[in-house]
Length: 470
Image 1 (tube, helix red, strand yellow):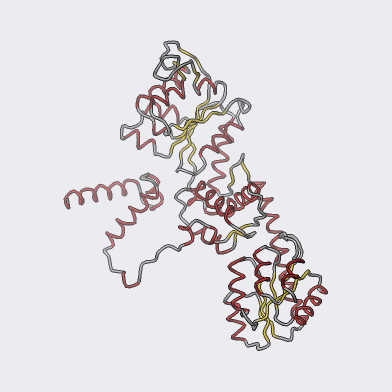
Image 2 (tube, one colour):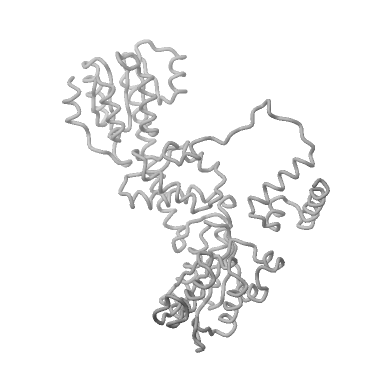
């Protein structure tokens, strides 16, 4: 066969729901022709070649689901072809054929990733069973994919995806408080989706048709933040060439979302307290008092109770903001949501980048489930987004991930182990848990399974030990 001629009649790209498309690779053209007729008699489409590079090109272009390949071929062995094919498409199924069949060779091929290993001459019924089993696998995969999409649609809460008990509690509380026009404080680590929850509360509220305005309080210095929130009059400061209304005026009658409110200065906290208490404010540089009716939803990644005790956040403002408080769990606290979130983001970015991405390979899913996710849902979304950009397959694989996810975590060498006192191990473990909780001692005590008093006692004792050592 002429490989060039073969390429001219390549099959079109296939989708997950279509019948199996099988590439047949053998160095004997008569065997290729025979197998093509056999496979098509079974009801499957096929494309035959004696050129392994033409077959690999077909796999690279996602135009076959199964490769039927001879083990002994000049130029490239079947095992070498298997390795290259799996690198190009981890979802490809390769069936090897050999005239020198042995159980050891079959087991070795399967360990390397082959789906089956058939002796030559090929028994048509044996081949039919293998292909029918594969067809059933693809049908099951399609049904699972459809069910996942239905589940995803059913568990979408105003753009937030979750099925864990912790997230159901968040959804339930958000529903309850949305219809009451009261202030809300949303607490949670960076990247957990605090703004999405705030938007959901607004969308379910009586003022859903009014404006939802966002202000990141950590992104600006005090003077700019004050002008942004309350507006200014002409000549109030250098560059103020005209009168300008602020976000509170713009959001009047609706909702204003103050993100990272824990980063504000004491002076700004006093101004925010006046708005909450009296529903009034003044533009920068103006004596005129303006009234406003707006719902305030604030968010923070800090423990504001600790900030109050440390004197960094006003206690009266904290109580005004936290009439209702919602804590968004970190992703490590809701691991059961990761598969659902993966499907959500794959669907989102396959559509955005116009790629027929079906999902992730099993090993890619394993890597994501084992990651600690310090950046929470935002980090997971960024990983899927970047992988969707670079992948050339219909299943995202580990090679498509950022470099830090491709490399397994370094394991300590066996000879590096040394016995440590239990007290030192406990100290190191408590330190790690505190770092994971961003210094939140209440949450750290909960994760450690000890009382807060016990944790404080331990930290106090360690603090004294450090000062004595110094």
